[in-house]
Length: 501
Image (tube, rainbow, N blue to C red; front, side, top):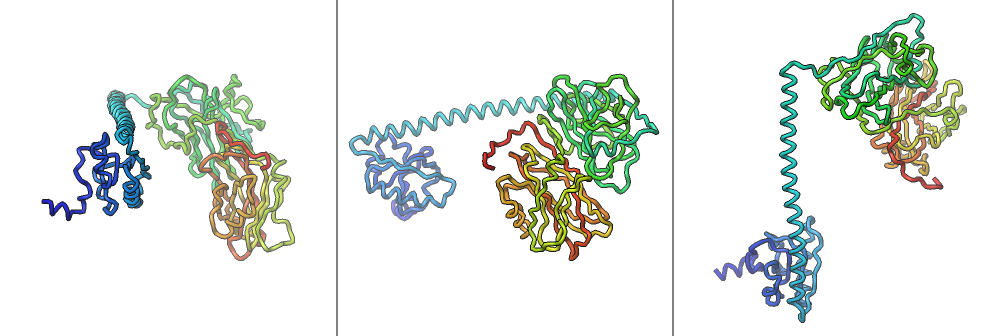
């Protein structure tokens, strides 16, 4: 047996530990340390051995009773470099005169800290097990409640309000208003248990591209609930149903509906009969003759508070959940768009302006060139907290050649031309900027650019309109970008900007 132990590689560990070992020492110091207060915590290792001594151990500290033992231990610990999950192990040199006292102190620190940690973890595990049992009980009760409702055929969604559409031959229509501003409509019922609503549309346009943007929030706090982005092609004549992620719970509050559009001519929203209460009439920032004491035609549904509704037909589910956020739409004023600057990156110098502002159309012209990227920058227009940007792009000539258009947000202190050069080389935009990607456009098919940021902008940024050629010719490619609409979250705290930015 002794011969076998002498030949075994694991013979450097002199005895099997009765429990996990946390202190490591060299075999050279075995005689001095084995009988010390650290004896039950020690594992002895030979510097020439492999890392097999780590079995049943978790080394936290190394101790040495001699200089030679310390050198051997450092040589042995160097072999742990390939075990990336272990931190560096410090080595404590124990003095011969006070070896027993210092060893007792090390043992007390190691065992005391680990004891407190283990007791804390045991308490956490116990509390976690209790929370799991409570959670299972809660879900069981919740499932029993749902089964009781279904067993008695109680509807989870019921209509509590309806204002029927009223078609007046003198109505001008709200299509242009939805693109210029947004329409607000208060719900005449409490928010408690509201699970969805329906809007009435008539005369959906044929061939128009764009989307209806619907937002629901609380009047008292301004906090948003959800947002729906509905393509024009998905809207059907008559009632269109919108479902909340869950029926509203909590205190009784007032709900406000905001509707706008981005793109071509949107479907016509239907209005209801004239009412006497001005508070519940539809309103907009831009005055419109059709909104004279008339609400929208809409219906309101309620369900079980906090429960996801399931009984609405052909519903539009939310595109984004904005619970707890204060959402505000804003558009770029003409004064800022008028100051657009040409930051194009191209070797071609045409005899006409490629970037300019159209005064009567509130649009930015960004004519692509056969080489490079045409770009127009509008400085300091993107507010902190902005989360989404949308715009409409058209080639304003029936014989215009196709191209590609995009939007980019750049920090105030950045080199815009350098970031455009990265895009021109086929690379990605710098991490400090946001790029919408390229969208191809032809004269026959205008496009809508909908740019959702992964995280809201932390500070004021520049807006850059980009265009490039997609064919060998750019004749008559008068690309216009207009109807800029931006959405920001008011609760986002913008980072402090440098004074010299």
